[in-house]
Amino acid sequence: MTQVLIIAEHDGAKLNPATAKCVTCARGLPDANITIAVCAADATAVAAQAAALAGVARVLKLENPANAQPLAALLAPQIVALAADYTHLLGPSTTFGKDLMPRIAALLDCAQVSNIMAVVDATHFRRPTYAGNAIVTVECAPGAKLVGTVRTASFEAAGGGGAATVQAVTPAATLPAHTRFVARAAAKADRPDLQSATRVISGGRALGSAENFKILYELADELGAAVGASRAAVDAGFAANDMQVGQTGKIIAPELYIAIGISGAIQHLTGIKDARTIVAINKDAEAPIFEIADFGLVGDLFQIVPELKRLVAGSRALKAD
Amino acid sequence: MKRILVGIKRVVDANVRIRVNPDGTGVMTDGVKMAINPFDEIALEEALRIKERGAADEVVVVSIGIADAQQQLRTALAMGADRALLVRSDTAVEPLTAAQVFLKLIAREEPFLVILGKQAIDDDNSQTGPMLAALWNRPQATFASKIELAASTAKVTREVDAGLETIEVDLPAVITTDLRLNEPRYVKLPDIMKAKKKPLDTLTLAELGVEPRAQVKLVRFEAPSQRQKGVLVKDAAELVGALRKRGVI
Ligand SMILES: Cc1cc2nc3c(=O)[nH]c(=O)nc-3n(C[C@H](O)[C@H](O)[C@H](O)COP(=O)(O)OP(=O)(O)OC[C@H]3O[C@@H](n4cnc5c(N)ncnc54)[C@H](O)[C@@H]3O)c2cc1C
Image (cartoon, rainbow over all chains, first blue to last red; front, side, top):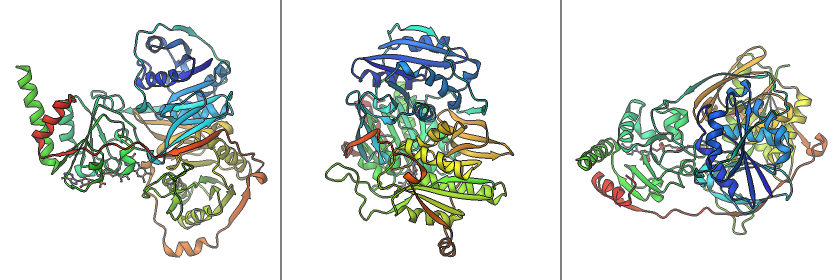
C-alpha cells in the first residue's frame, strides 16, 4: 500500500485550498492511504476541515506553540520524526511547500520531485521544466521514500463529505531556536484569493502606475475576480509581489483569465496555461499573448477596461430587474 | 575573514525559445545562448553589496557543472566576485548532490552566509537552498526580497504567497533570492579583463568526497500541449457577449 503523508497548509484558522489539491494528486497513487498532518498552535479547526476532505483516512494534529507560524526549520524535524510510516510525503508547490518540503527531503536523505503535474504510477511522475516549455517524465527508485511538491494548478480540489479520524501526536523532535518569526504583512483579504479565484484579471507594464491599477480593481469588483500582475508591473511597484503570476510567481488555473496590457512573455504564459478561458487586451496586434488567447481584443486598455466595467455592471443591473 | 559563498548555475538564457530535442532526451542546447541563472545573479549582486558596505571581506562563487561553466564564473568574477570554484561534473547533478557539494565547501571555506537563487530557470526545482540548510543544520531564509545584517543575525523579508514575511535567523545561514532583492549590475569591459587574472580553481566531486546521487531518472522530455489560437473580437461589447455565451461571466 502507498502510505501518503500530506503536510497541510493553513493560516491557523482555515485550511488552504492547495491542500485539497494535494489530496487529489495523492489519490492518483496506486492504493493510496492518505494522512494529513496539521502543524499548528491549536489545530482543532484546521484538522476538522482536513478530516472532511474526501479520500483522507487520518488527520494528525501536531500542536505546539512553536507551530503558530510555518517556519520550515521548525516544522521539518517534526515531520521527519513521523516519516517512517510513509512512502510518499507531499506538500503544495506554494511558497509554503517550496520552503518546507526540500528541507524534509534532505533530512530524510531522499529525493524530491517538484511541481508534480501528473501521477503516472507510484514511481513515475510528469513535471514541467524550462518554464513549462518541456514536460519531463521522471522515474524514482521503487521502494525509496519520496518527497514531492504538487503543482496545484494541475489538480482539482478534493471534495468534502469525508470523515477521517483525527488524532493528536507528539513527534520526538528537538526544535532549533535559530529561526524566529518577526512579522507578516499580508495582502488585503477583502478580495478573492489569486490562487483559488475562478476569475482573474491581470495587469502589465502598460498600466503605467499603481494608481492606474485602480481601473482593474473596479472591473474585478464587478466580476468577483482576483487581481494579478506581470513581473514587470510588480518590479515597477504598480502591484504587490504576491500578485505576480508566472514561472517565478503564482501558477494559476482560473475559469477566466483576462490579461490586460501584458505582452505574453513565456515566463508569464507558463503561469496561466491551465486557465479555462484566456482573454487578451493589448494595443499591439502582434503581441505573443494573442497566440494563446481564446478571445483577443486589440486596442487601448484605458478605453476598453472602463467600457467593459460599464457593460458588465449594466447587464448585471438588467438581470437583477 | 568574513566570507560569503554564492552559487552560480549555468543555464539556457531566459530569452531563448526552448525546444525539446527530437529523441525526447532533453532540450536543444547546441548553439544556444547560455547565461548565469538570473536568481544567482541577484545572489551575487547582494553578496557584492554586502561586501561593499564592509560587512564581508570576500565573495566566493561556486558552480557545479561542465568545463564551460567557467564562462559563467568569469562573468561572476567580472561582476566583482573575488574567487571562483568550479566543481566538475559532466552530468547534471541532482539538488541533493548540489547541496552535499556546498556542504563540503562550507567546511573548507567557513562562510557566514551562503546565498543561492530560489530556483534555477532550467529545471525549476527550487530545492538546493533548503536542502543545504537542512544538511548544514542551519537556518534558511528563502525567497528573500530584503536582507538586513547585524553582527550575528540577519533579518530577512521573504516574498510569500500571502504577502511579505519577515524572519530573523542566526548566522551562519542560507538565504535564497527572489526577484525584488536587487537589480544586478552590468559588467564593464575593463572588469572582464581584470577578471581573467582572478583565481578560478577546479575541483572534482571525488576530491570533495561527494558521491553523486541518481535518484530521479529523467525518462522522457515532451513539448507541452499547445492551446488553440482563438478569435479576435472587435470591441468590448462583443467580448462581453462572447464571455457570456461561454458562461464564464
Ligand atoms: C528569471 C525570470 C523570471 C521571470 N518570471 C516572470 C513571472 O513569473 N511572471 C511574469 O509575468 N514575468 C516574468 N518574467 C518577465 C518576463 O520575461 C517579461 O519581462 C514580463 O512578463 C513582461 O511584463 P509585461 O507583459 O507587463 O510587460 P511588456 O512586455 O513591456 O508588455 C507590455 C504590453 O502592454 C502593451 N500595451 C502598452 N500600452 C498599452 C495600452 N495603452 N493598451 C493596451 N496595451 C498596451 C504593449 O503592447 C505590450 O505588449 C521573468 C523574467 C525572468 C528573466
